[in-house]
Amino acid sequence: MYVTRCVVLKICSLAFDGFRNLCTGSMEPCDGMNVIYGKNAQGKTNLLEAMWLFTGGRSFRGAKDAELVGFEQEKASLSLRFYSEGREQEAELAVVNGKRSAVLNGVPKKSPAQLVGTFRAVLFSPEHLSLIKGGPALRRAFIDAAMCQIKPAYASLLSHYNHTLNQRNALLKDIPRHAELLDTLEIWDDRLARYGEAVTKERASYIEKIEPSAAEIYAGISENQERFGIQYRKSAENLSEALRAARREEIQYGHTTVGPHRDDLDVTLNGVSARSFGSQGQQRSLVLALKLAEAGTLEKLGGEPPVVLLDDVMSELDAGRQNYLLNRLDGRQVFITCCEPETIARLEAGARFEVRKGEIYVSTPGTGHSGPG
Ligand SMILES: Nc1ncnc2c1ncn2[C@@H]1O[C@H](COP(=O)(O)OP(=O)(O)OP(=O)(O)O)[C@@H](O)[C@H]1O
Ligand SMILES: [Mg+2]
Image (cartoon, rainbow, N blue to C red; front, side):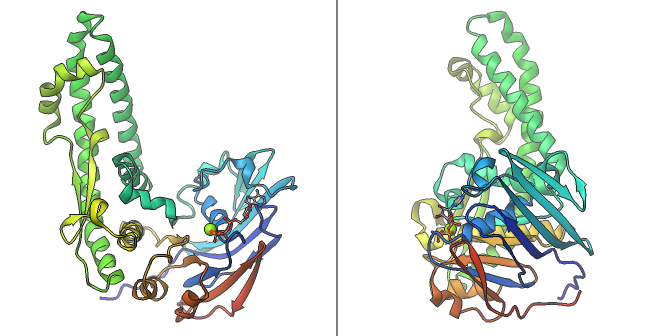
């Protein structure tokens, strides 16, 4: 079945001045695949970081705003022309005196965070591998971040839950010294169970939604050699009952031991834990499949396909997997950074840019993928 799309979110051009090590200049990517290559420390990640900042988020490297300004520069300015919702738009970001500011279509915004939802992107960076390897908090954060983009009401539900959790934890700590407070615990239990059940339900349904597309993407990456599975794991089947059962223990520990803040995700390959048994290439492919499925979900829920930014994704992937990423991600604009020239040779259609000491050179004219407007 073909879906005709008349709107595709894409970057038309990005200009930079005083940003990190990038020399003053601009780049005009093609509508499809854009490979950004070059040796280490030339500015490839800096370039993706510049694009990412227009999502309204902070630097994905956890950089302070002041660090975005090039050494010996007074300020950094970025300007993005992008096509979204059927028209060309322009956003500008500046960092002056360690503070970021944003302008959208000529109108200054109160804060750069107000750009959220205007220009959307999904990012893979090697740090995201901790999504498989790291602790459960990162997996919960992955779901929460994706859901907050899709459903703003979820953000407020989550903040109600967290607030209730903090209040209840404070109460649990006080109870040993003030036995009379025990009576009020019931109220907090009810509230926590209500918000908690709702958070768990929303998250589990999001995972159910992304599973088929993540599985399909994973099958593509692995050339159908491996079976992908993902499941939301609740810390309690029935939260109010679990709270009641854990009460004595929780008063002793002074914190809440069950609820969505203790839930996790099980990611499996051929039925076994990817965290314990997955190879490096498999773990990388899994994170990618999850990220790309996140992009697909945004799109299915009525949004435009977000721009896909893949930083340093190619290393540890074999030729088949690299091929899939370079040549099978149709219908959206993608940016991939890599170091190895052999990788670029696999690119069937798209544009190539080389980054050398902060300068960006177009290696071949942008071709392919430029679909109907
Ligand atoms: N504020 C800044 N001003 C000037 N240079 C900076 C600034 N921040 C970072 N750099 C420099 O930018 C250079 C390139 O960084 P970047 O992370 O983009 O490299 P890369 O091309 O992605 O390399 P790799 O292949 O190793 O990932 C680094 O050498 C760093 O010193
Ligand atoms: Mg890099």
